[in-house]
Image (cartoon, rainbow, N blue to C red; front, side, top):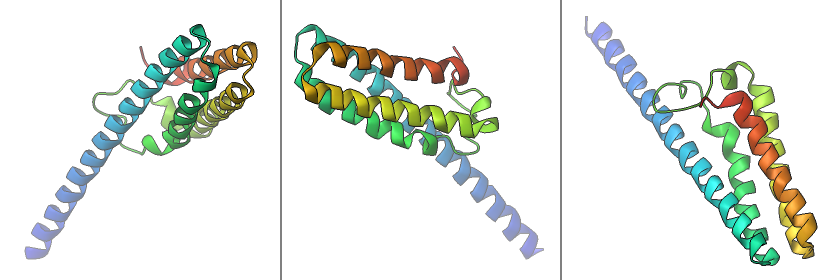
Length: 142
């Protein structure tokens, strides 16, 4: 009898712990995506003010977050306050590839900004936006 109680209690703790981890992942990814959205607005303002050199550090922050994206969608984090579509988990290789494309685009934006070429930086900024959109179109519920 004690063994059943112990097993049931252990299972309940694991379930609660798993739910807490999933909610932590949801919060971390929401915070990261919100930060990326703000970074896009910041870059737009910087380009409008001819402050191309300042775009690089912002792009670097976006790239650092992009590298984390695949780890922020563990199994079980599809429940709760999230706009993530189930396709993320059923087609994780493509989802991961899209996150990597976002990371690469952000790195290229950082490089373009370092060159000081406003036109090249603006073009790459649009490519970053395209990388975001490609993932949102497939994996984010409106």
